Image 1 (cartoon, helix red, strand yellow):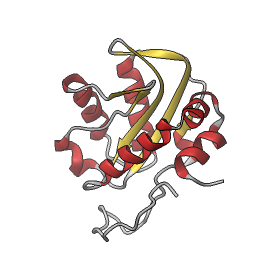
Image 2 (cartoon, helix red, strand yellow):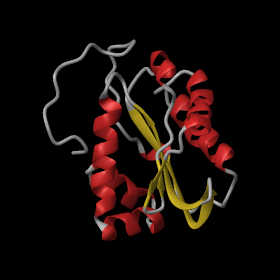
Image 3 (cartoon, one colour):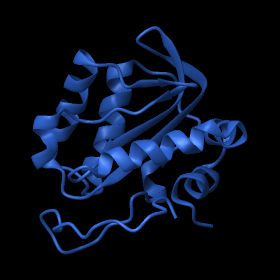
Length: 159
């Protein structure tokens, strides 16, 4: 599973329905290069379209990038909203886009973009778990070049 340790129970975010952290429909592979802002908007829109966040969160993701780069090294970017946008998050979730040809991310080459929305402090656990996955070079390569099922299996820990 993506989360290995039992978490303290937190109040549900805006609704009783519990969503998975990642759905296959929120994975786009072999994407064509685009601008950094367009990619942030696309990955944010996936989060909005599947009910993780309100529409305003997408703009908050763009604002975050203006003040602090979400480039993490190793060809990975993890765009997420500014702190003030926390209230627009309904459920913790991620959306993934892969760019085998790479894209420019503020002067860095990025191959995997994972948009993140985390209720409360859950985004910290999400970030830590993604970082752990990316430390495995084979898994990182599979994220870049794999199909939807491969990406889902790596990030969600499900077959």
